Image (tube, rainbow, N blue to C red; front, side, top):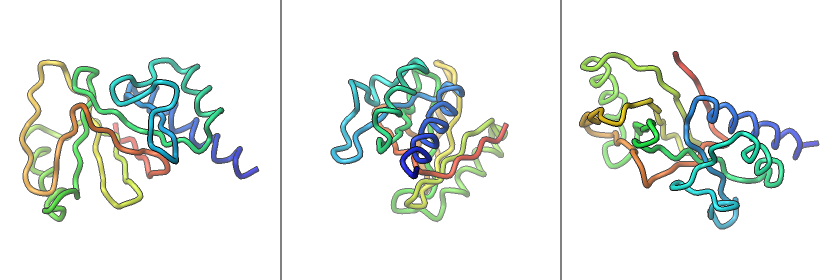
Length: 151
């Protein structure tokens, strides 16, 4: 019963992100390698394979693959050597550019990420201490995590 509950949460989170056009892939829980050819460079594009992989691998890590070319970047706050300044950096960006629609992820280690939709030609602004942008080549585990959508 517990495996079915875990599987259904994994599917729900995966489809939630997929339906928001956030690139995702699944990796093996033990060795962290992509499952069935999926990776940060080859996220799952269709719902059916996503549901199928989640069903076959209920212990898989659900990973977000931010990619500027795919229209998604992530701002990590509370990261690095100056973690305490991350939220301040985010607030400063909002003061300058306005508060965007965000998808907020609180990871088990306490790091928070805000995902944004961006255009291909949009310049990624610089951030202050305690924050960093992920725009491709990096991914982060998004399950289990706390998810909050703020339109």
